[in-house]
Length: 261
Image (tube, rainbow, N blue to C red; front, top):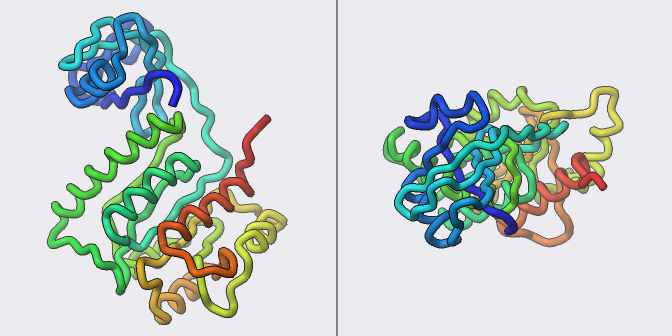
C-alpha cells in the first residue's frame, strides 16, 4: 500500500459544507484520525486521498495531524472513471470470517458489490432487521480497509441479507446471470463469458451466484436456472465457497475489464 488514504463521511457535520471549493476542510473520525496519524504516523503537510464508498474522492493535505482529531485541507476533487462493466457477487452467507475475506478481496479484485444471500444451508441467521443492519455496518469496515489497501475508489455496494427466493425474483435487473455449479450441465465459466461477449447485446451488469458452505440444494439450483442463471464450472476441483467466489470474480473481471496499459 503506497500513499495515505482515509475514509471520510462527507455528509456528516462538520464536513457537509466543505466540499464546494478548494480550501475547504474535512474532519476525520476518531478511528480514522488514530489510524492515519497514530498507526501510519502521517504528519502535517502530508497528502491524503479522502474517500467515501460512493465513488467520491478528494486530494487533501493534512493541516492538523493528531491521533485524536485529524483535519484535512481540500486540494482538489479527483474524478474516478466508472468501470464499463459492473460485476456483482451474490454470496450465500458462509461463516463470518470467510465472508469478511470475500468482501475484502472482492473490493481489491474490482467487484461492484456483494449481495448477501440467505439460502437453505446458510448457517448465519438474523433475529431481526436491526441485527442484519448492524452486521452490514461491520462489513462496511472491511470494505473501507480494502479500499485503503487497493486504491479501488469505485463505488461498492453491500446490502442487508435477503432470502434467495426474493433475490431471484429481482435478478432480471442484471444482463448476465451465472451460478457456480457442480451440475453436469455446467459449462466452463470462460466459455459462458465468451458467448455473452459475442452476443448482439453484450452485458454491462453481471451477477455471479455462489452457494454457501455445503452448496446450494438441488431445488435452489433449479430455481436459479429457472430465473435465468447459467450454470458454470470453475474447473475440475471442488472449491470452498470463498475460493469459488474469488475464482469466478477474477475470471469475470479479467475477461471484461482487463488492465489498461
